[in-house]
Image (cartoon, rainbow, N blue to C red; front, side):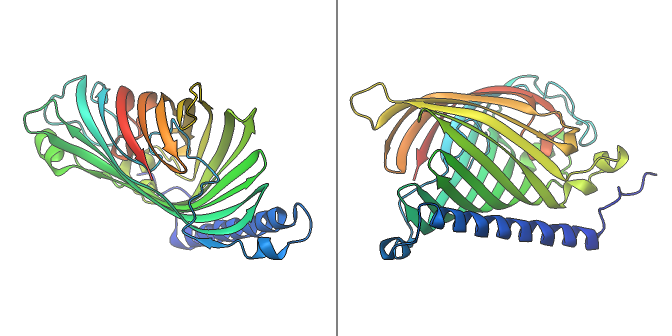
Length: 321
């Protein structure tokens, strides 16, 4: 029997979490000092600019990230059952290799405090939550496949063409009872807590390139049989991508957008997925409506199927608030 991989005991986990929290706090402190002092002495007007529930976003979520918290509903054609992943034992009943599912996203980002407000940028502290559910509408029973949860405390920062987002994040995944009963699948423990950061630079105002990583300081996934058997760790994830927005119409509230996003994780031995998105949106301030076409290929973003290859196409209607 392979023992749990080194570094997984509780004391080391707590130390890692405390260290990452301190690192994030130092980063925010330095960034705040940099933004506030970047253009000279702080004026009384700047000192009084702290606002509660501001209608402002300093870091837009990646357009192609399949799990960026949002409020939306869509149809997805997926082959997630074409290959039996090693996360759990074999299903007791055969499943269709391709099927249509409904994906429901309930969540979003709420800016809570604008700590710094300057012409060149600022700092905003917010709250973020999202649940992403899939339902097998191809079946008469409309089985609930499962849900992925994300809860985070993001700090968004911008200075001219540079922007960043640092989050303390919880993630978990749950298998639907109906799917478990119909397929014989058993839920696995997936999720944990992490500190993640994304850094972005805008190019010619219309294009943004971003990249970053997460340090998982507490992982439930570490205890899954497949990771213990193969002596894998679940400590780091990587993310990078590009976004673009263009307003070809006279009414600049309307625009077209697109993006590509790549993510990988240590738990999959850095085998990841590539996601792409494109669509049309209408927006007033931070609020708006988007129609998005999505494509994904690689390891499934679903936590309960994190070692299963998946390819899907989807169309989605989402609301920004």
